Length: 392
Image (cartoon, rainbow, N blue to C red; front, side):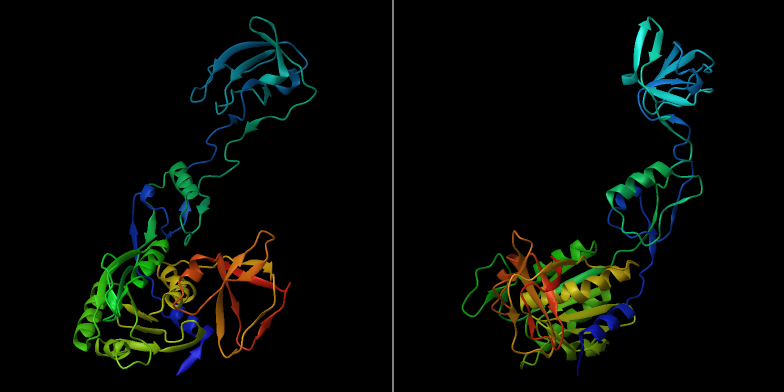
C-alpha cells in the first residue's frame, strides 16, 4: 500500500531511537550534538577590564591634568589605587585598577609633560567591560541538543567545558544491489553501469556527521542479499540499501529484509521521485531501501533519511528554505503525488526548473541550486508565484 509522503516522514521520525551518549574532548566535539547543557564555571568577564587602550581614571577628574602613575598590560594587575588627579595607563583587556570608573581613549588625550596627560574629548563612555556582564557563573551558555559549531568550541574553552557530553554518532552502512553494477574504478562492460549511488549516499551520510561504512555491491541473488542485509543490520545502527525495491523480477530486497527479522513499516510512498522507498526496523537497527535511480535516492535521502539520522542524535533538523519567485510558468501532467523538482536560481533571484529527464538524470542535481515541492493536487505554478527553495 502506498502511503502519503507526510505520513512516511512521521513514521520515520517517530521510530528514531536516541542512541546514547559519550564524553569527548571538546576539540573533537565539532558537529556533534550536545546531550546536556553547558554551564559556565566563572563570570565572564571574570573581572572589570579595560575595553580599549587608554587611561583608567575617575570621571570627576576628567577636567584636570592627570598624573600617569603606572602602566599595565593585559594579564597584569595594577598595584596602584586611582585617586584624585591620578591615572593608570591600561591596555585592552587589562583589569581596571581600584578607584577608577572610566577608561579614556588614547585618541582623546594629549601629553602635557612627561608623565602628565590631559583629556581632550567632550565626553566619553566608561569603556569598561564589567565583571559578569556577558555571563555569570552558573549561567547556561549552550543548550542541550545544539549541533556544535566552531563558535561553540570557543565558548566551551572559555567556561572550562573540556569534556562535553554528546550524542553517539550512528554507524551507517551503505550498499547497492544489482548484477549490472561495477565499482567506479572498473570499466563497465555491455549492460553494466558504474555504482554511483553508494558513493553519493556515503557523502550525504558524512554531511550528517555520522560514521559511514561502504559494504559494496550485492549481486541479484537471494542468498547473498539475505546474508549481506543480515550482516549489515547486525554491525550497524542504520543500513541504506539502493536498488531491488521496486516490482521487477529480481527486486526481492523487501522479502530478504523480512527474512532478516525486519519489521517493514512502509514500502511505497506517494512522492516523485522515490515511490518505491522502503523503511523498516529490527530490535537494534533500521534499514532504508531506496530506489536505484540516483536522483530518487538523492532526494529521498534529503527529505526522509537526513532528518531521521539527526533525530537519532537528538537533533531536530530543520532544512533551510528560501522564498523566491518563479521565473516562468511550470506545469505537470499528473498531480497524484508530491513532487520534488530540481531548480536553479538566476541572477535576478528567480527560480527556474532544471532541465530534467527523469530519476536517472543525476546531472540535473549537479546543475541545480536546490529543489522545490509541488504538493499533491497542484498542477501548475505561475510565473512570479513565491515558492520555497530548499538549497542542496
